[in-house]
Structures are given as C-alpha cells and as structure tokens.
Length: 123
Image 1 (cartoon, rainbow, N blue to C red):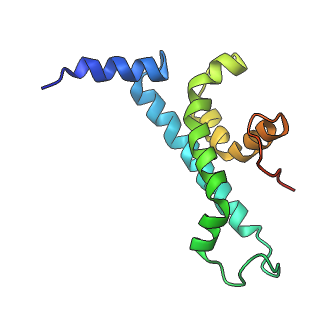
Image 2: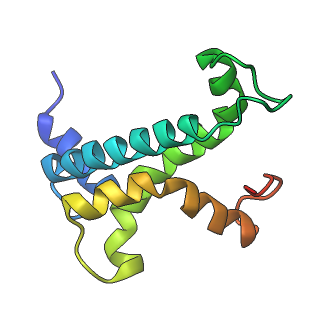
Image 3: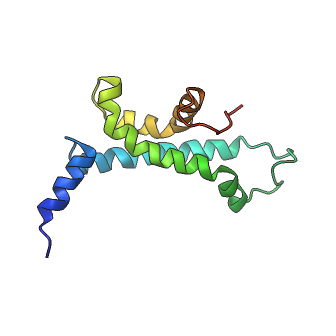
C-alpha cells in the first residue's frame, strides 16, 4: 500500500502552499461562477439566427462551445494556483467566484495577446 504522504506531497507540488481543502473550496466557487456565466451565455443566444437552432439544443451548444468550455475549465485551476503571483494579493471565495465567472474574458485577453493562437475572438 502506498504512503498517503506521497499523494500529499504531489498535491502540494502542484497547487503550491495552498492546502488541498482551501484549493477545492476556491475551485468550487470558481466552478459556480463559471456555470452562472454559461447560463447567462445561453440566455443571450440569438434564437432567430440562422446559425442557432430555434429550440435550445444542449448537444448543439456543447459542440459549438466545446473548445471554449475546455479552455475555461483548464484555466480555472491555473488561475487559482497562480493568482497571488499574478495579482499580488490573496485569493478568497468571492475572488474565486469571479475568476470562474470571468474565465471567458481571460480567454479573450489570451487570444488578443496571441497566447492562444488560431481561436476567433468573441464579438
């Protein structure tokens, strides 16, 4: 049986000085913000557009936004781990929520700076 301290050491090497429990708490709030952002995006869809089905199709929406969802989902833990380094202040639940909620905006910044090449910018 493997020693549990090995897993703890690996987790701390990945997430830094933040405890695993605190990281998961921040991740939870960031995911809540991300989900609310997705729901707002769904509510803003143009029902009359020829590029959108009249009736909301979750499958179509996932296929249409798959790359965006994947990048946002991967950026959230990265933003949580490096928040203090980039911003210079401590992270809290509210900040984690807004990191998740604004993950699309972070993607736009990265696309404009050509850090994420080949992705069209949001209009």
